[in-house]
Length: 306
Length: 277
Image (cartoon, rainbow over all chains, first blue to last red; front, top):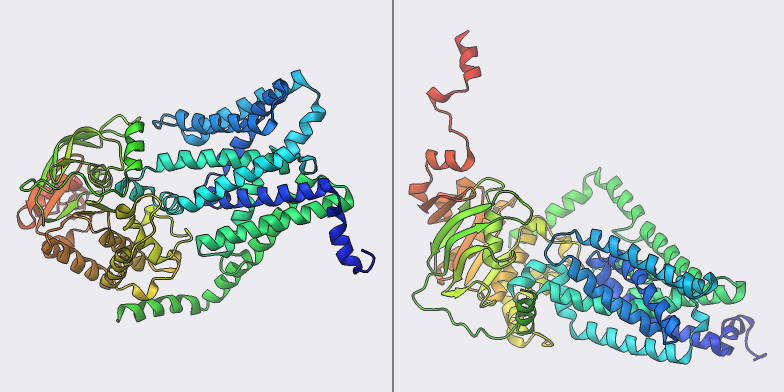
């Protein structure tokens, strides 16, 4: 150890502890799971559903805690119920979807808090609400790994159906593929992903793992597979940064992971080529000179003259 | 309804078990009525239509006349209403290979991270189904569709980088790749450059000559006599239906658009009063 340079030692030291190793493994797997699904959540505008899913899971966790069962399994049951509940409430367009979600999610979250205040103190609440990546057990790791295999496998297998229903639901219907059915499938996967994310950043912030890396990647890529890979990369990177910050400065790991993701998003939002704020301001500036617009038409003329 | 969706979805991509019935019209609509959920009045009422294979028809009417709704009903995008829609002798939705729907350009999310080629390939999904990757014949169909719409050089661009005319070509290329029999185009000519318009008319003419059936909604009256043999004027119900020459009259226009064409004796009374002074 002592022969290694100081900075490598600094990087390695945290992971000499087994709770840090487990935390790292969990954080990486959760990042991958959420980032893969997150791309579709962002493209379909389902961020609110993701957030709601995380909150409605609370009563499931509390009931599992009460009965002495595995918390993640309790959460999973509640997540699946939510997935079907959302579909059921909005099944014939009587209610706007976000209205139904808003009602359900606050109601179930309140139920979860109520149950929690009956069965235990609010101190236990913080782990569920804000995550406790360093308290991951061996069983939890296996559960998360299982969820990972399921989510990544399903997305790979049904990639083209997910893409076509996200991009153009009308076309999907005309070729006999019901966007509603695919959406149910996605909601179920989302329930799995959310449950895995709770261990890492907690109920309140899990939506950030789903949305922020995917949104960052969306600003940087024009191709979906690339967007997903970038999103996974950002997510894993933020998990690492978050863990180091948490270890060396004794900060809440869930919060550091989320803030690392948010910081990256803001930087990219400002400086991304083409879609970034600075880029667009500069483009506007130059196009007042007329160059940009002339390029556009120039290209089209070229094509049309073929 | 939901179960039906699941069943259809499970079978998506399978070959049609319901062949076109010979001698039946390409599209037959009988006494169709449709009201949007929560709306007081029906947007479409008493629609009866019969379209033969190989016809190229313009669906004309003002905004809100129900053109888009009718097209969406035929394509099966809107829940089944009262009345019946029959496509090549089978109920609507029986065969998903046979109907291609080209949405309005404004209905598509052009920022979506897919390339032109990938969008056109989506037309082939009707023939692929679950867990199947595109086969050589699917790639051939896509290449042909791209060439027909003259967008081969753009194939690997993200769709948001294209001009409006180019985007419309992509959507039409997708329907060509689908290799359907009934083509439904919702306002494909809105704000298009002339070369793209001409190309679209050329391709639609070729489709009609290959006995494909084409239904195009539009509010551009000027193109009717040149490019369509038949026009259907719509305003909640069918106002006029027949050869363009015989339905494109001042009376039809007045009924469809609720305005009277100005002639000497129907001049605006205010103007008349002014003139009298």
